[in-house]
Amino acid sequence: MSVADKIFRKLNFMQRCVDYLKSIDPESKGLESNYEKRSAVERNFQLAIECAIDIGEIIISKEGLERPEDYRSVFRILGRHEIIPKEFAEEFAFAAGFRNILVHIYEEVDLDVLRKLLAENLKDFDTFAFYAAEYAEKLGE
Image (cartoon, rainbow, N blue to C red; front, side, top):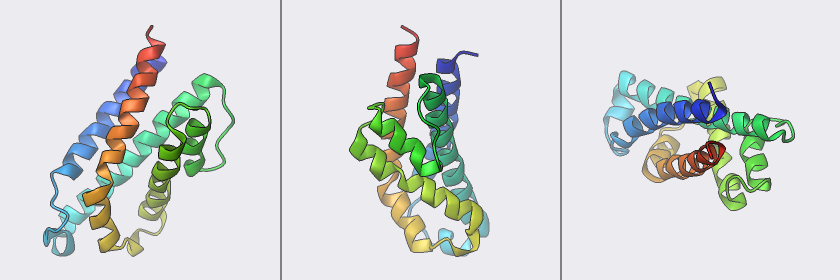
């Protein structure tokens, strides 16, 4: 499988997760009272973020760039090398931090933060997907 194919495969999966998240009303009482719904939201956030990290790592490897120290560094490296805009890279690095909360301190996921991310940050995945797809398309040239 080509590098471009790997990126597009991850992008498709990430988009499925983000589409689910976009279907959730951030003010829904179900996030507070429905364990299954909240679990699904948290898991889809985790998977979408992990897809973005995987895509970043694929690009870093393909380009022979420096090895990331942590997940936040993945996006920062992409920004430093102008694969994604530097300012966006800094903003999107938050995703890696939220992924760590979801995976390691899951009992402390703040409902208000979850609602804020649903309401305000899903577009960041679309922006990342745009730049990743643009990069993958250039590989096909």
